[in-house]
Amino acid sequence: MMKTASGATFDTVVPAGEPWMGTVVRGQRLRIVDLEGNQAVDTLFYNARDTAEHYSAQNTIQAQRGIYLTTGTVLLSNRGRPMLHIEEDTCGRHDTLGGACSAESNTVRYALEKRSMHNCRDSFLLALATHEQGLTKRDLPSNINFFMNVPVTPEGQLRFADGVSAAGRHVQLRALMDTLVLISNCPQLNNPCNAYNPTPIRVMTWESA
Image (cartoon, rainbow, N blue to C red):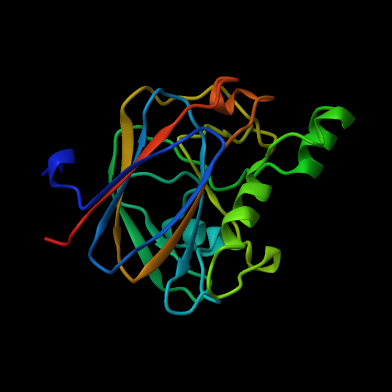
C-alpha cells in the first residue's frame, strides 16, 4: 500500500546542493521524492552500528545480475549482507556506476575554472565532519545516484544522459538493518543529470508495519 505523507514520522525538504544525514532503523521505510524532476540524489549507506560495513555497488550488481537499480533490488553491503530493499520506484532508473562529482572530476570533465564549484564529494565530507564516530574521506564508499540516468553504451562506456525522472516521482526503501543514510542533493550544473538546474528533494520515513 502506498504510504501517505500524513503518516510519516519524519518529513523534511533538502535544498538543492545540500547534504542530509539520518538513521533509519530496521523495518522503517525511507522515501526520497524528486520534487521537481531530474534531480540526482547521491546517496551512501552505512551500518549504523558499525560504519566499517557500508553499501557495496559491486556486491549488489553481482547478486542481482544487473547494473540498474529499481523495485526488488536488495542493496548489499561490503560484507555481502542485505542492507535495504527497494520496495517502490516510480522512476525506474537509478545509477550506481557513475560515482559522485568532485572538484577533481569537475576539472577533468569540464574546465579548470570549474574546480571551485560545489560538488557531492565535498557535501559528503561536510556532513561526515559532524558525525560522532569521526568518519572521514577514507570512509567514502561507492554511492547510488537516485533518479540519475547513466546508460552503458555498446562499447562499454558510461554516458551521462538526460534524466528519465519527473516531478513527484519517488523511490522507497525498507531498512533491513539499522542504517545510516548520507545524501548529497547534487549541485551539478555541468551535465544533464540535473537538467542543468539542481532542485530540492523531500525525505520521509515511516515506522515498520
